[in-house]
Image 1 (cartoon, rainbow, N blue to C red):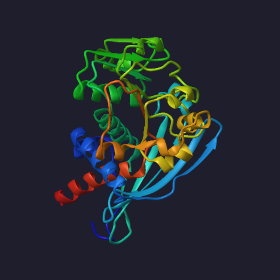
Image 2 (spheres, one colour; image 1 turned 180 degrees about the horizontal axis):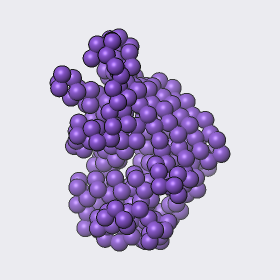
Image 3 (cartoon, rainbow, N blue to C red; image 1 turned 180 degrees about the vertical axis):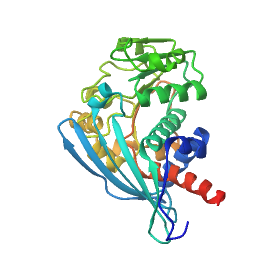
Image 4 (cartoon, rainbow, N blue to C red; image 1 turned 135 degrees about the vertical axis):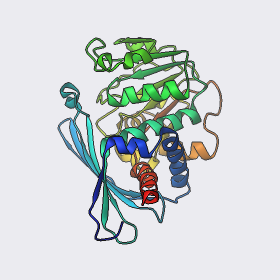
Amino acid sequence: MDATSATRSIGAAEIESLCSFDEAITSQRQVFLAHEAKQTVLGPRAMISQGENAQFAYIARASETGPTIVKFGTVVPSNTSRSIPVVQTNIAVMDPTTGSVTTFLDGEAVTKLRTVAASIVAAQALANPPTKVGIVGLGHQGLAHAHAVTKIFKPRELIGIARNPESNSFSESGAAKLFSSVTSEISALRECDLIFLCTNSAAPVIKEEIPEGGTCISIGSFAPNRSEVAPELIAAADQVVVDDVEISSAQCGGVKGALEISKRNWSSVRSIGSALSGSGRRSPSERIYFFSVGLGIQDAAIAEIILNKLSKRG
């Protein structure tokens, strides 16, 4: 596309056709490793709060020579009752040569794809082979995680935890067949060896220790005022892993709270890039928590795949 061409918009359906889930998983693994090797470009994150809502923006490149993306959006937890996404975003892509904005990507589609793919990458690196998996929160992200877990891990049991199981949208979407059972009782997680937290809760939903050898992956503790896991559990964990230590130190409410009440400090917190480049899980008995605040480089990695495929089309 030359500098005089019109800016194109790529919707959710086209994004799904241009980037397979397997490609997304590979892209997230590679970009985390590149970030650990300081081969990515990640600008400061801007975030402001408005009651329980938040607005954010950031800029990033997945590689030195790749396209620059600017992502901006909102987080509105009450959107659950409106049956629209809690997180709404847009992604602008700039040409690395001309600086022109060439493409707008459907932000929700990219966010869902890269978030689920990153969760799978983290689970593959940190979890024991799972036989019983739990997913807390069965909104857009929770159901996307359920599909991915079923495809990648094929667990013996998949437990869904929802605030109102009977009224949740998954009952109408047909996704209920993915689950062995769905309940509102968090105690159903007690025997799960892998847990995904896909809520927007400001208060901890995990208040009891996960099983020995268990792994808990949280995607909802992305702001200082949100924590899906009780701080004392994080403080007692064998490993705490985040997508980026510096950004998490400012944004990840759960880990910040845990360090404030314990003798641990940020030097004891690992990045997922470190786990991928070295040893992830160090013993079968470890209790491990992974917290994802979401990084612009993850979106940029998906954008690179999409733009490369579009360029081959001509």
